[in-house]
Image (cartoon, rainbow over all chains, first blue to last red):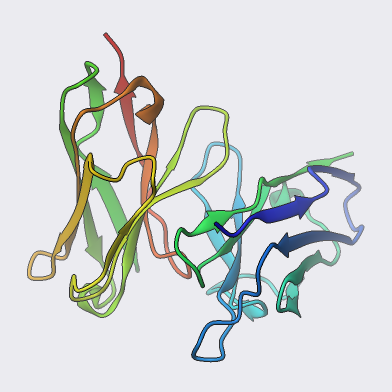
Length: 112
Length: 113
């Protein structure tokens, strides 16, 4: 199984600050079609997960451009520029290249 | 507006069965592969099963293989998860989702005597 290692497990940030979350996979996430199926999700408190970024760097519908995703092969990063209060929650990366699909352990974003 | 609405959860005794449903709307359901994902209380996300758009390809997590069956009815825009031989460790909030798209609000399954 592909192991997704997410760091840090938690972050405490001030409004307006920028943060980055790392997600590393134990295998390359490049599929046979040449695409990389690495997605980022946000689970706000008491809510179901919501898609932020799909295929490494594509913004989900309605997601503000403060969010950005970069990376390739086995090393990926989610960046949040100018954190807002509504950004708090748990961030997950998930790979949809290989079966079984696997999630990172999550990064809890808290506000200072 | 894309919507995924799960139903069918509840409290069930160990060893019993339960069937979850997920009604999709706002998109062409028959064009997309779908997934069931679960989240045990206070824990992270765990992929359970996937089914391709035409049901040709089906995959399961090892933890549920042989006990759970994913299926879909594209005419009814509905995804299903038949769960049998339920165990306490299956207790979780079950989400219907497109991993690169929308998620439902989840339905709780509690396995307890």
